Image (cartoon, rainbow, N blue to C red; front, side):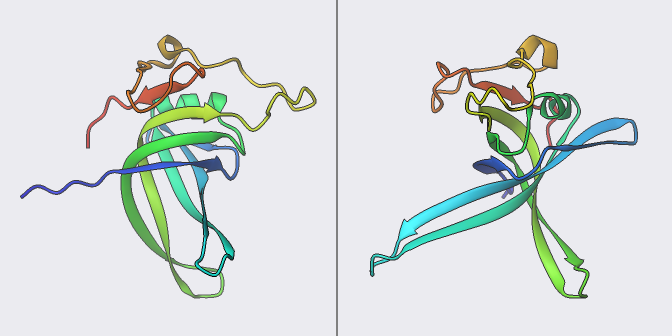
Length: 153
């Protein structure tokens, strides 16, 4: 039987994307905070944040470089993997990483504050090299843009 690895996350960027070139291809890396909030049976409110490292390659990396900033809300779809490493104190750690395939821009961190640094205008799907498509599950009347990777696997 075939296997399937797919994850969908909605969260906020923990920092501006880091843009690099690797073997002639652009890659954008950023951290995504996914917040969970619930109330225990004793009435105590619990808030927890899970952090994921996200990587996008190619034209979606271009979109991330141009339009994403710390605090922006996005939806990311991709493949989940883990990476083990030793931290600076020699303790073994495991990091969750997502190789992004689809990116949905949900909102920005500026909230209309005119004192913030200027941002680029909303992305144009034709300019990015990717098509923007409406999903039945997502409202598109809020200026949402969906970018899909052309690569499979």
